[in-house]
Image 1 (tube, one colour):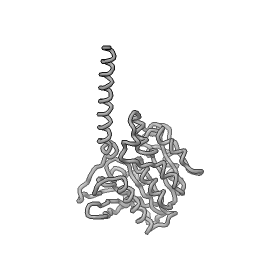
Image 2 (spheres, rainbow, N blue to C red):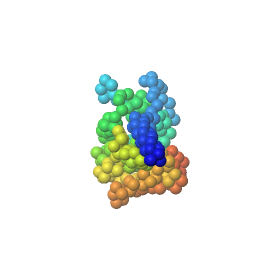
Image 3 (cartoon, rainbow, N blue to C red):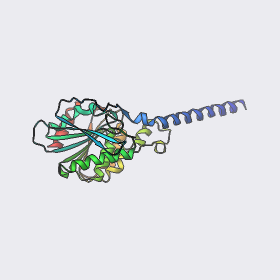
Image 4 (cartoon, one colour):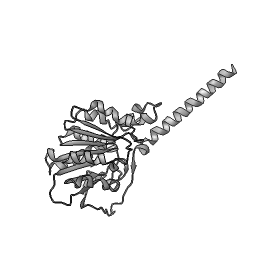
Length: 269
C-alpha cells in the first residue's frame, strides 16, 4: 500500500512538472522563435554596397523598414526579395547581399515588425501581409521572370507564402523548416506542439502551391533546423525542384561552402 501511495505521489509530481514546463514553453514561444534587435528611428545604416533605405507606413502604428542593396554595375538582371531569419535585423544579414548583387541583382531586405526600425505589433498574418506588399512593390519595377524569392531560416515560411500567392522566376530556401509546430516538436516531442504553437508558418503547405522552380539548400549538421525536419519538405516538391544537401553544413555557415556558391551562382545566371 505504501509503495502505491509513493508511486501516486511521484506521478502527481511528474504531471505537475510536465504541466509547468508546458505552460512555460507556451508563454515563452515568442521569445524562442523571435530574436529581434530594435534600432532607433534615427539610426544611420552603413554598408559596403550601395543602398537605399525605405520606410513604408501602413497605418499610425505599423511601419516597415526595408533596405535596397544595388549592384555596383548599373545593369540589373532583376531583384531578389530576401526574407531573413529570426535574429537581429537587416544589419546582420547585409553581408549576404553581395551573393546576389555580384550576379547583377538588386536585393531587397525588409525587417519584420519589431526588428530594426520596423514598428508595430508582430503577428503571423501581419508578417505575411507586409512580405506580400514588398512583392507587389517589386512587381511595379520588374517582370515576374526577373523576381527571385529567397527565404533564410525563419524567412523560408514567409518566402514560401509569397511565392504561393505570386508568379516569380524562382524560389530559393536556405535551411528551411517543415512548419514551426513540427520544428518545436522535434525538440519537445512530449508536448502537443501543433496545438500549442501560436505561429504556424507551414512551409510545406505553401510549397504545394508554388509553380516556379524551387531550390532548397540544407546542411546535415544543422542543430537549429535539424536535417530530419527540413528533409520532410522533399515529399511536397514537384518534379524539377531541387533539394541540395551540404554535408557537414550547419545553420549559419552554408555561405562558407564552395558548393553553396556554385549552386547559387548557377541559379542566378
